[in-house]
Length: 192
Image (cartoon, rainbow, N blue to C red):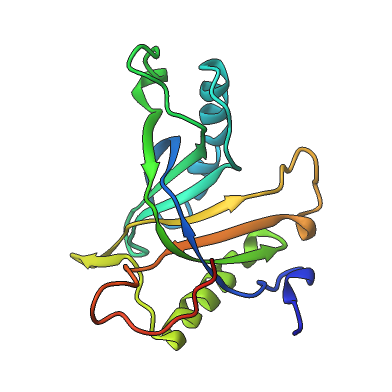
């Protein structure tokens, strides 16, 4: 098997994994096409807030695409998984922006992209095409022309402060599938 995950710009093999619920803290923003820098600038805010609360990180920072409308504004959340969300006695978040949530459990199609974020659109297209070829359905509905995703994420596994070479950055795409145990959902290969 030729593992393309070792070559920059090429996504590796797709795997389907079962994930448990995952607490996180994040900031949700509505952004126009090309406005994702606004979301990226929130990463230090979320991480700083979580550190100030003494929260333990449980994974790398992520972008979660809640609603996608390429013709208008998309809802994108920047977040970080934590071991547990703050309790009710936690101080308020800065300007009310940071919120607590839980990423849903379920089966996720995942692929690792090695290289610049500029290649993520192609990696996304390949992941979407893979699922279509397998006869799998996403946990996604289209409402008034907007794709509403149950959970569609990009996890940024490389800290750019430690590794400035974008050719070496690792980004995991993880898109939640429709419940594979539901009648009418066919295909796919599951890996424990």
